[in-house]
Image 1 (cartoon, rainbow, N blue to C red):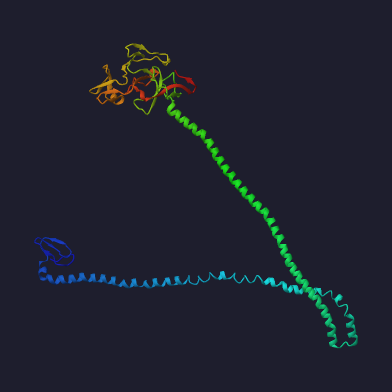
Image 2 (cartoon, rainbow, N blue to C red; image 1 turned 30 degrees about the horizontal axis):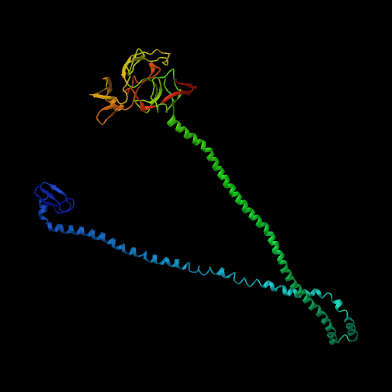
Length: 448
């Protein structure tokens, strides 16, 4: 069977045929049995192998043509550095040329010194004007020679000779005078240089004085500026000291001495009203314990992130009970007393029955029976959460009260969320912030 895809003969595998060249498969009998028998399989495979080799040879040929392309940029790289080397070479000898220029200028300085010499010789020319007194004597000689023989040149030359001699003497005198004047001028200049130097020194003296004064003034200014800077720094320090001191004092006072609070609710009406601002003393219970009827600031037992203000009614070791809104307390001695009602909100009459509540004291053992806790006198204190809140485990395995506990109530009895309704009914002594002393806003009033 011949493959319909690539044209090669497919291999017979019984019920199906497979093409060894392209991998195609045909299931069922050979539809062209006669054609497959008539055509020899060997002849058909040879041209197929050759056709596969030809395109492979053609693909390799373009790779060989790319070789001469890489050879062309090689000479361009070698030609580039040549002009770079030649360019800086001529620039080096140009530098010494301006250095040699000032050398010939030195001999030019003496040239103007020689110029005054011919000027000295030219000066006697105007001195020849006084010839009349010098040529006064030979004048009759000239007149005689002119009268006798005016055409004799020798006599004229002879007569002119003494004139030249007479005229020569003033030249020599003029030269001497000129030389003397020159030397005199030189001396004068040398003498004149001395006062010039003195004048220059005199002129420079105030300048130096001014410079010294300017230096002194600059030093003074620098000192004054330094003093000003020091003064400004000192002023800033002096200004900041009281502020820092006030902040430090306020921090110490608020952290260790007093506590400031704003009351948002009316649970303490009429003693403390809504939005009153109060001050509590942190030092009140450093050496003492809270007393009955004290108003204190403390951390709320059910959520210690909140701060509450209430009045102390029940002390450690006592039993408290509310009957018709009136609070009765049984002390540790077994006496039952009725608490004061003078501070209770007069606008309302207290109502309700609560208790009895036993308040355990520090060091008292607490027993656990199932899910409930019991004090030593057998009063149930609550569930096992009471142990986690108020007790510690001793090495002997006993649960004891870690701090003294207090029972708190508000003066506005009918509208106060206090120990009667808390999950953790008691305030531990280590959670007390301080004793409230007075309120300062909206008006100052001492709290009792």
